[in-house]
Amino acid sequence: MTPLAEPGTIDQLRADYDGHVIAPGDAEYDQARTVFVGGIDRRPAAIVRPADAFEVSRIVSYAREAGAPLAVRSGGHSGAGHGVLDDGIVIDLRDMRDVEIDADGKTAWAQTGLTAGEYTTALGAHGLATGFGDTASVGIGGITLGGGVGYLSRLHGLTVDNLLAAEIVTADGEVREVDAERDPDLFWAVRGGGGNFGVATRFRFRLQEVANVVGGMLMLPASPEVLDAFLVQAEAAPDELSGIVSVMPAPPMPFVPEERHGELVVMALICFAGTPEEAEGVLAPFRALAEPIADMVRPIPYPEIYPPDPEDYHPTVAMRTMFTEGVDAAQVFEHLEAADAPMRVAQFRVLGGAIDRVPNDATAYAHRGQRLMANVAAFYEDPADKPARQDWVDGLADAIRGDNGAAYVNFLTDEGDERVRAAYPGGTFERLAELKGRYDPDNLFRSTQNIPPASS
Image (cartoon, one colour):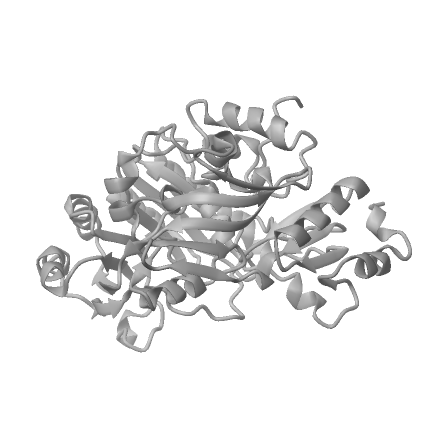
């Protein structure tokens, strides 16, 4: 039995703690324990919403001393649902959303309960940006700790490449401010090592001048030839262009002709961080690959690249992430056409550019030379369909990945220790494990893609 199950413990926690404590039976409990991924039904003993690092420190110390399981939630987008757990304490950062912008110095301190959309909107008022991923509701805490691959990565690097400092509460309850000079080992570890080393409560980012972009969705008729040519063009494009290209059934969107609904299409989300005049020449080869079904790529303020997410969207999905040096487009289409899942997708991101200009051992994200990131997913509603969907996903992933076993930690689901190791190649895992032993020897922060301390 967890110590939190003992009579009166939650009442005492509420009495001792200044912040907001939510427990079973409270009206907001079910909403508070819900994460982005569907099918996660875990019941924590207490959900605590702190206001700053010092309140976080108190809860970390309480959990350590009580021997209580501990999870940390920023935006709740972990594919394995690591932001919630049974019978333990969840530190929910959603009330920590302050951002301090130094527009002249082009830096910002941001609390980690902010979502990517909220942070980007705040910076957009100054014509500045930090690159995150592709989803507005992702918490900046989780995506930053795992690396941060997004729309500005080819031009300005990963999120961690623009991280100047971090405030982090370690397992001993100490509030540390780390950077390249102060505790450089821990600063190295949090730039890609995930939530293994503590609760990140604030980040200091270098800001980039990105007021407007040319971006949006380009939907093309699908064929192996179109996919091949699209990826070739994306790799040859200037670093200002980043995008996500997916082969998937056309969703029933209002601007998609009804006769196309359910038909395989190539759907690209494109972001060009340059002028409309420059974009015209860069985007012309993509538009020429086939007559577009829909072309919504246009000049927009950068924050509009993140459309709002439906609050009640909690997908149940089987998925697999990988890096690859190339794609057999014919194999991709063969698998997609043979699948029975109404919604399935093979998604590709061309990397390179500024990502590859950072030394591979400079951060705990150690995939600098990878050419492509691929994700395969099949959605389901009935849990009984999950095994078949996962088998299909694994089959297509194996066909795409070939001999490349590497993985991006932010897109891992609950896939076991070997896949966590695959996220940290070339000695990175061993270095992280040694640092874990130094900063969290009892593995308090294990509700994550866990790196056990080397001593264990």
